[in-house]
Image (tube, rainbow, N blue to C red; front, side, top):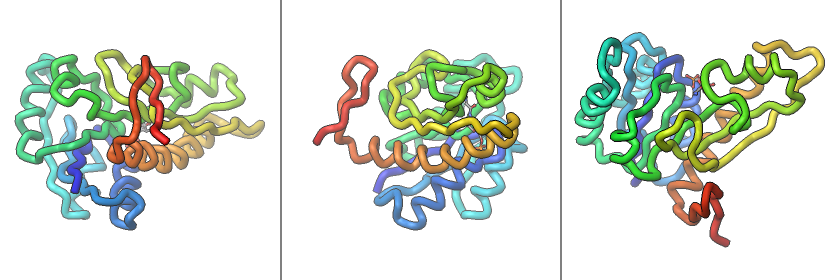
Length: 201
Ligand code: GAR
């Protein structure tokens, strides 16, 4: 049984989709051991409590990044995590924390990286006028929205889209992409060649 830790700062729909896929057996032999947030008011924490999953809040406001991440690390340690999934965790991890979990931290980003890193990626893509938007699940490294790509899903932009309708179709694909990526990583049948994740046959 693999222990997954979720880090989130907001409503937690990606976390909820992962929890649902674990419950239904689409992600086998795994459990969400803990949900941690830097914000006490994150909606995702309430979902975790309803599901009976332990929660941790480590406030980040006013704290130096590494100090915050050390506190977070201490709080996560007892849960023996095999994998950490950032699911709308709106805080850059310190290089120190990334190094504590080599190739064991994933992030989801609502664009086809390397296009549109950073905040409000869906709005950036819409305003840029792309015809194909999408989402990316990738390993976390020391740079923002940057590590090796595990899964991408494309979302065509429709003539009558606005940034909200586009973002909600991207979110549907995020909910599929994250579980797909978790399965690939937990299965472990891949290697990283340069930046490329190459799956074993
Ligand atoms: C998702 O769209 C996720 O891709 C995005 O925040 C949203 C969280 O939604 N993350 C980023 O932009 C990270 N750079 P959720 O709380 O409903 O899962």
